[in-house]
Length: 218
Image (cartoon, rainbow, N blue to C red):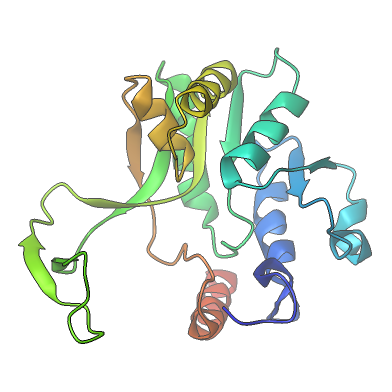
């Protein structure tokens, strides 16, 4: 997305995206503290009113997502048993979905993620474009395919172990669940709402505003 600021600081329904995202977490009775991981050159967050919330703590992150997540995990004390990892650019998290995810702590599992079943027909493209165009290589079965969302919820010590192991192997991970999978752990899929979108394109802002309006009316 082309913008003059990082996407989490774009305006959405009278607030920045990150303010909506943090408010959804802070208003949940089971969330006790929120660690916000910032880039080293971030000067925008401190200017937001929510930056002074007593339950928010700040940590400086790294170059890659996994580096920033690990910085947040290392900030937490070892006696913290569980941790949620959430994208700042997902402002439409439904509290009912969050509650369902948090219930995994009572089930004796290692944790899980919010996800939605794939409903569209999935096409795999050829690795090389033809005449500058992407071409279909094959149709993939959507059976048992899910879109991974956030938050992702895991036992803290196990998630730290998983990310450190992935880093040692120089394995690129795109979310926390993929690190857990490398350890051979079974990650639970908790079905969430499709409204839990990540803002990546300009048109996503209009859709997110619609979803926020619907949530407020519930």
